[in-house]
Length: 375
Ligand SMILES: C[S@@+](CC[C@H](N)C(=O)[O-])C[C@H]1O[C@@H](n2cnc3c(N)ncnc32)[C@H](O)[C@@H]1O
Ligand code: SF4
Image 1 (cartoon, rainbow, N blue to C red):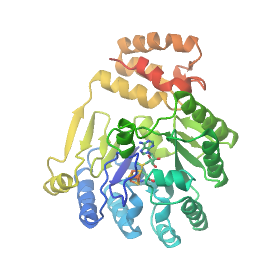
Image 2: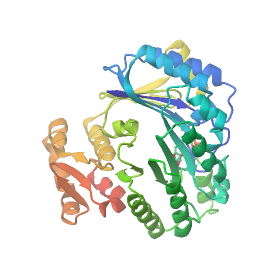
Image 3: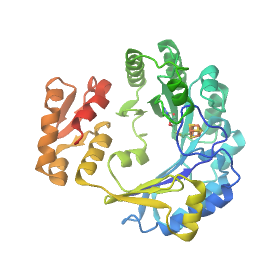
Image 4: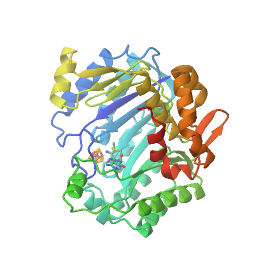
C-alpha cells in the first residue's frame, strides 16, 4: 500500500502565517502540470509496490486547477499505477474557489475528499491572516459540496492567534460543528521565521498569547470535539468514526509515499527524497531528468527519531516491540528509560506494548518528545 502526494504551489495571495513553498502567479500553470506528468513517469519505480491507496493534492492551493487539469493528472497516475477501487483522493481547497460551478465540475473527476482551509469564522481574523475569503464563503462552499454529494469533508482551523480570546475560539469551534462535516484539523499557530507573522513578532509588532492561554484553547478544542463525537486521533486531527484521513494516517504509520512537484518529499522505507523548492530549477530538472532532488539515506538514530515523532502523536501510539526488532536493544532500553517517569506520572501509558500519550500527556506532548528522541 502506498500514497501519492501532488504539490500545487499556486496561491493568489500569501497568508501571513504561511511558509509553505508557493508562488503568487499562475502564469506557469500549464508548463508546471506538464512537469508533474513527466515526473510521475520518471518516478513510477520509486516505490516497490505499485498499488496506490491514497492520492493527495496539497498546496499551495490545488483548487487553482480546473477539473480538467485535476483529472489529467489523475489519469496519468491511473495509467502508471494500480489504484485500489476504494482509493481516497483528496483535494485541498480554499473556500472562495468552491463555487457552485466548480464543485459541480469536481463531480466529474475522481476527487472524493475535500480538505478546506477555513482558519477562522471572524472576517477580522481572516483579514489579519491575509486570507482571500471571508466567513460567508465557508458556509456557501459547504452548502455547494453537500448539494453535489460530497460528504467526506475536512476543515482546517488555526488557534493560538495573536489576540484570540477563549470566547472567540469557542465561537469558531461551535460554527465548525454546526457545519456537520466529519473531519477537523485544528493547528496551533506556529510563528514561522520567514512568514509575515514571524517577522512582525521579531519586530515586536505582534504579541504571542501566553502558554496558559494556548493550553486553555487546546483543552477546549479537545473537550468540544469529543462532546460532538469526534475522535482525537492525532494531535491536530479529529474525525468521526470512519473518516480518519487515510493519506495522513499512512504517513504517521511510516508507509511509503511518492511526493510529486516542486518542494515535495518522498519516502520509500530506505531513503527520503526532497524535490527542490524552486519552480525554475524543478521544471528544468524534470525536463532533463536530473538534479531536481536530493536523496538522504537515514541513519538508524534518524529513523528511530522519525518513528517516535510521527507515531507518538497518534491514537495508536509507538510500538515498543517494533523499536526492539527494527532499531535494536540500545534504542529499546533508551525509550524505556526515558519514558519511565512519564509513565509513572501517567502522562504516558503502555498498553499491549504500545506507548501512548494519555489525555493529560497530550498537553505536554512536545516536551515528552524532546525527552524521547535520541541525540
Ligand atoms: C498546506 S496549508 C494549505 C491549504 C490551503 N492552501 C489553504 O490555505 O486553505 C494546510 C493548512 O496548514 C495550516 N497552516 C499552515 N501554516 C501554518 C502555521 N504557520 N501555523 C498553523 N497552521 C498553519 C493551515 O490551517 C492550512 O489550512
Ligand atoms: S495557507 Fe494555503 S493559501 Fe495561504 S499561502 Fe499557505 S498554502 Fe497558500
